[in-house]
Length: 102
Image 1 (tube, rainbow, N blue to C red):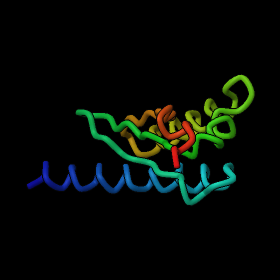
Image 2: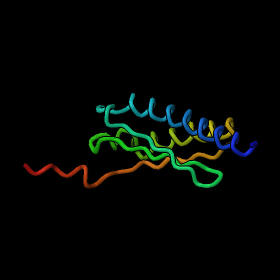
Image 3: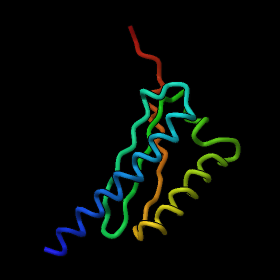
Image 4: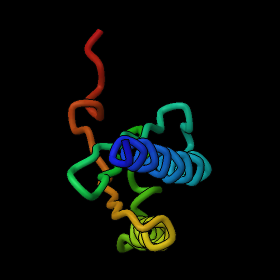
């Protein structure tokens, strides 16, 4: 029973951090409707995968990766507070950036 409670707690923690990253990313980009953050649990840690429109990838990475580094710093602080390890992957879909053939 205790273990099941811990799993639910981990899922809610991941959901909170996922919502935080989604909200921050949506304020940074030109197309907030295309922002998605997926949470993938891997043992004692959770990987958050951030996807944005191909035209917005530079906005979430920033000059010399400063914005991405800042997002990871925020996640690190949340990890310490929630006592659960989180990491952030920014996914670039190369296929999505190609123009659609009509």
